[in-house]
Amino acid sequence: MIDQSLKKTVLDTFLKYIAIDTRSSEDSGTHPSTDGQFVLARLIADELKTLGLRDVSLDEHCYVMASFPANVETETPVIGLIAHLDTSPELPGNCTNPQVISSYNGEDIALGNSGIVIKARDDAYLREALGHTLIVTDGTTLLGADDKAGVAAILGLLVYLNNHPEIPHGTIKIGFTPDEEIGRGADLFDIRKFGADFAYTVDGGFIGEYNDETFSADEAVIEIKGKDIHPGYAKNIMVNAIRIAADIISRLPKEMAPETTDEYQGYLHPRSLDCCISNAKLKILFRTFSDGKLVEYKNMLNKIIDEVSKLYPGSDIKQSISETYRNMKTVIDRHPEITRRLEDAILKAGLKPIRKPIRGGTDGSRLSAMGLPTPNIFTGGVNAHSLTEWQSIDALVNVVEVLKNIVIL
Ligand SMILES: [Zn+2]
Image (cartoon, rainbow, N blue to C red; front, side):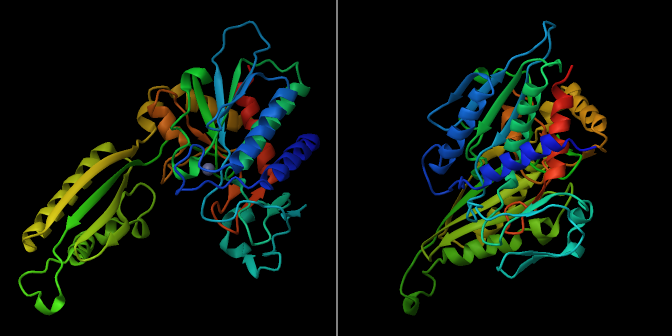
């Protein structure tokens, strides 16, 4: 049976948070990348203080941290719970006109007057949400369930534990981060100050899903110098950097692209190209689950560049490769008790644990590499980064249940 008062708490909290525009920005050089994130961070910091959490802090880079003290004497691990404040830069983030469907009946869902319809037949998760309370947008903004569902679930847990002091638990550390969507969420995360032995992000996936594995990711930047001259007098003189870049791209294996791979397959992905005749800058992303494969990809690209250089005498091609993040699994596998605790918590909530690799990175990939093992827990949000994003509030209650089972003794 679903706890109706908890359901109302998470629903109200969720609706309050999604109205605040916290979209981050790739183009900003500041930390946080946008001021909107502070509006939500301040609100949450106040709520944490009201709930009686200790050491509530909001720093100048918009990280919110707090501690929910243990109510038992026994020694227990200090568990961290983390969610991110920002929403994707791609779409407006102020969902001030959400639609609440109180008991979903299985039909298509029209989003306001936007003409956008979520088709029940195309959305397998919708079929699992019959009878649930769903929140959708009016088709003009993101919902922001990624990751305000995670934030609302953590707040829901704290309200619940506050109302139930008889439930024994150890110390819980709470962290809310800015700029996850632009890959900077972990940049200024102070693990020592946070003080957890391990943590969980609450950041996406449908009911029962969890992730202890992400891509390992690198980025290659290729800078090409050509030679420009009036095309009328170019014979044997011009070296066209645009052609060279195109030649390199055309040699990348088509069967190793994001658009042709899934599950455990990796890819090389030309992500951006700025070019004119005299110079070009090409960025290629490497994504794979194994660090060994990253070396293979690097060799593959070196070979392509060697071949292409020979075809364009007078050109100059330089490449540099930088690390973006690493598969969290290498770290988490050393601590099997962290995923075991999570699986047990999902089972105890009456759900089926579904382990899924993430074809991307999370704050947890970076935090794990920095020394804080951090797998990810589902939120029940679907269609992230899209106008058709939707959230099941029943699923969100499930999340709180799982979080409770994680921290309970
Ligand atoms: Zn997210």
